[in-house]
Image 1 (tube, helix red, strand yellow):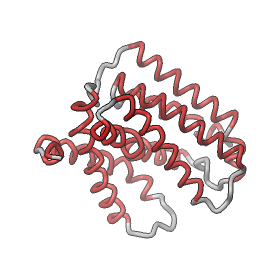
Image 2: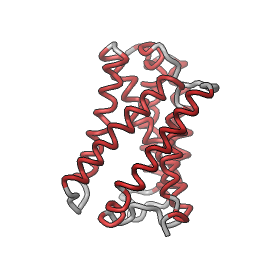
Image 3: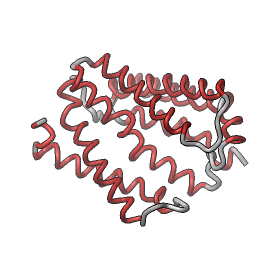
Length: 219
């Protein structure tokens, strides 16, 4: 645990958390019926992000042997991330989105501003919560990159299950199973890309997958 308290770890965790909070701001600002004022929600996101990013900076490289940030991952990993993002986008567009748009109000952003806000939130907070920090924590706990990758994927599927259970409308069992399978496949691809090329590759994959929800394509 001493790694978490290192000055270098905390310095970069605060910097990364500030970026995460800034990226989350449009989403928080557009949140209709938010239970707390914007400044309180941003404060919670910032403090939570500090802890999550501290996991990444303290443990990822130490226990995985791979850097979390790779500025030049190479052309082959970039092509792999591009293909993975396009595959996720096409599969969701054809198999999941039509049913989810009908069942879940607000599933697709109504405006370009909403789409940007949702994308920024996913890039700024959702990834560190569901991928980067869980992997670092699992790698430290299990001391096995492979097991840590599996735990990270399962954690993402578990969070999806909680999110689906919180919906007022119950999803049909086949659709729910398809969502879980999609999360496992996408999570596995994201972890592999993360270990191969750092944070930029799964972020690029996520961006490509979310392009399908642009309002101009769903009008």
